[in-house]
Length: 196
Image (cartoon, rainbow, N blue to C red):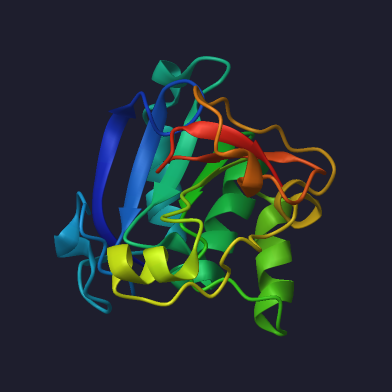
């Protein structure tokens, strides 16, 4: 079961192609510029089964074309990772492209969380990584929360499992942001690509 804030049936900016966008309920951050502050509270919202949600999304498949699919955003999607993994696995069983829009909070490399995250990445085609601020003090000022990842976000092996494609951005991040060089992600807050 997933706690849903809302859905959008014809998203054009939330991943490649036309997307069915699912906004999950619950977020631990309090971003000053949040578009959905009503999605912060956990344990509320419409409760929907994974099967019902994938059936509902699939009704719009004819609009997606070759590149479209479903995007899960928030709130923070990783707070409902178990059910999200089930949703993406079932989407892949139906040949549906998946996109995760996340700020990577509460990302950690500690187990058992990291193992569950790696399982989710097996069923994730695209990741939109929203880095709120590069420096921990700036992150806390913008979000009222300490950054667990800082500039140590998940590495591409976890994000892409050697076969994922990065989404395209428009402007480069500052040079010092590219400390890890093995892959690429999008930082929506900065609207650009960077090497991680």
